[in-house]
Length: 212
Length: 219
Image (cartoon, rainbow over all chains, first blue to last red):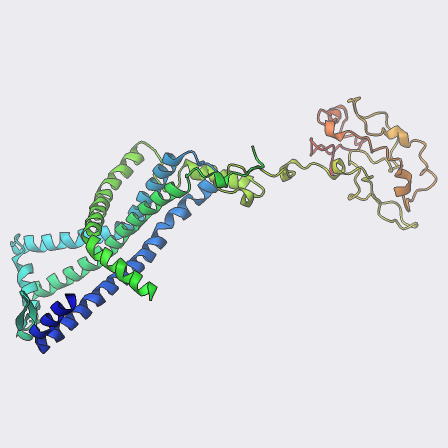
């Protein structure tokens, strides 16, 4: 029954539609594989970031200042160190973002344009617009050809334009650095949770039978 | 092939759960911004109240103290309830060698017959008296501590070395080692205050080197 349904479906679909379908499946597969390997990369980066906790807590655990009965104390101390470490590393990026925002606000105040219209106009002037030819495919609207350029970017010199562009680029750079450190903070928190599970687990296999 | 399908499966899971991950990450970004705003205030408060605000805490200081005082910290395992410290002699106590050996601890360097005897500092005699220094007069018992089991100086009054200023090989004469039963363990020199009884200006008696109170002398 499935074979006959598939044959009927294959007869209804034209050659063009078949090509589109195959292309769509390949794109979806590539996106899935991409996300799969992206997860591997992000997981590796978070593993390295999370092991900062091991470095910070190593001597304390090694000398048994915090023992295996003090799970909550371990978590409290590790999280305290993680927070301070985050502030220590991320404060330049945060200050940078704050300076960029302050510079934009001061410029807007000087131009008497607190709605920041000069910024939105600058972004519109520098952007471009594409026109995609589309087609209907089983109820979905999908592009079926290369796009055409309907509006080109305008990079003619304008103080507002270049100031807005510079501030945007700087903000993106500082924000990326800040977000990376936020990710590191998250990684360390996950590592603390993992260590609390494994390090403080009561395991009879760890007990030496010669020692009572 | 398995790895490929595994990656595809993980990719699907990531795409499906990506809104959750994005929300969790956004929450941590907001938490980070809050931390950046509140931490300077906390730092200011710690400055006013003279409290410490750094990554290193009292736990780190305790750990460093243990590591620096321990002679072999690498033998301390983490999370091992069965750990017992090894019974090795701590280096700080300077327990002398003779406590671990019943053999005579005296040693003599060979001396040229034509040379006068030079006292060897590497021998295991305590420096407070030189029983072989016949140039010094015989003293009465210099130590008020009568528990002293160390042979008295007057034992060497009639010593067999009077006729022989040089000591080619003394180890045989200490086969019956009178030091064998010495009880430096009891540390009879600890309360030795003989230094107070003698006038260093007269320099009539050799000074007692009282550096190591717990081991009965320098070795």
